[in-house]
Length: 175
Image 1 (spheres, rainbow, N blue to C red):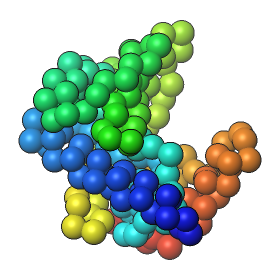
Image 2 (cartoon, one colour; image 1 turned 90 degrees about the vertical axis):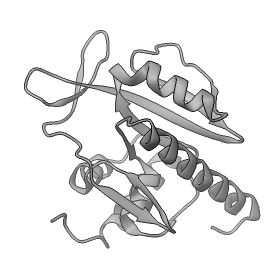
Image 3 (spheres, helix red, strand yellow; image 1 turned 60 degrees about the vertical axis):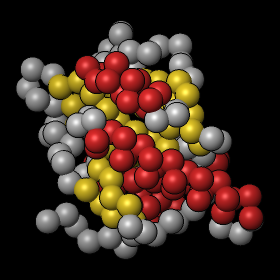
Image 4 (cartoon, rainbow, N blue to C red; image 1 turned 120 degrees about the vertical axis):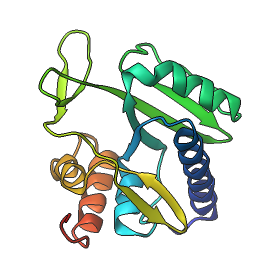
């Protein structure tokens, strides 16, 4: 991370993750980081600048999340389809929530109206990762790696996915 602006943004996002995790933990709300910040927590270091914080949470906890975060000074910045996700802002940092449900077989599914999308055949679990003294939940390593193996469309997103996969290659397999 070369630029001062990138370093400042990363530090603000890191503080937001700390605040987010503390708030959701205190309220007993299940959540899991995924995306670039989950990579950093698995690797144990900040590997690159990030656009936002990606968080998965149970759809049923929508109202609990809203009350908890608003009480801690987060601003709700809704999206068009609040069934699948929403956003919250803390300072200059945006947390993007993706909501999930468990289907009849216990699989983790994103509840799109037209066609639910299977995310995982197994629960995300309750394991925590630590980075610079902050602990948070993340999605399992195997699932995180699988999500990075096929780069997204767009040069910028594909570059981030390749960098994330490279960083994750330094992490041993889950126990």
